[in-house]
Image (cartoon, rainbow, N blue to C red; front, top):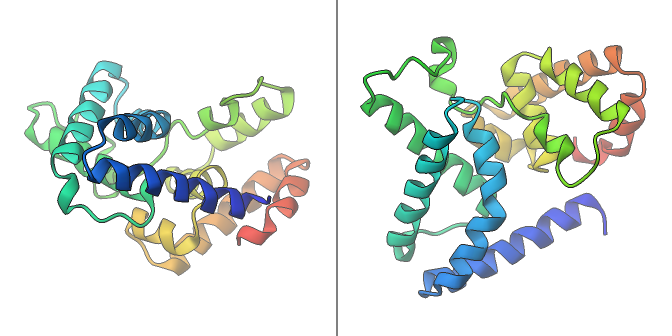
Length: 202
C-alpha cells in the first residue's frame, strides 16, 4: 500500500468513526479525537507557546464538535479538524486582551503557519542524524513554505486541499512547494532522493 492509499484508508477509518459519533457513539468520538489530537496540538503550538491554552482550546473545540455533530458533514476529517481549530484559535485570540501577544501580526490573516512542522519527523521513530538535518533545514524556510511542506508530505494532502486550508489558490500552493523544495534540495543533497520518492504527490 503506497502513501496515497494509506491516506485514503486512514480517512475512511476516521469517517467511519465520525459517522458512529454523529449517531451518538461517544466512544467512537473519543477514538476519533485521540487520533487527531497530536496533529491539532502541534498545529496550535504555532500560534502560542502556552500549552495549557492549547489544551483548553482543543478541548473546547472537541466539545463544540460533539454538541453540533448532527449538523456537521465531513468529507476529509483531518482537514475539517484543522480548519475548525484555526477558527477556534482565532476566535480565542480575538476575545483575549492580549490577542497579539502570541501572533505574528503580518500573518494574522493566515492562521495556518506551522512553527512545529519538524516535530512530525520525530513522531513514532528515533531521531536520526538525517532527521535532524531535515528539521534544521525546515527551520529556515519561510512560514508559508513550511506549512505547505507539512501539509503535503506529513499530512499527505492534495494541492487543492492545501489551497483550501491555507486560503490561497492552487498555483500559490505549487509555487510555495517549488520554492521550499528547491531550498531544501540545495541544503540537503540527500533530500533529492526523498523528494524523488514522493514525486507522485505533486
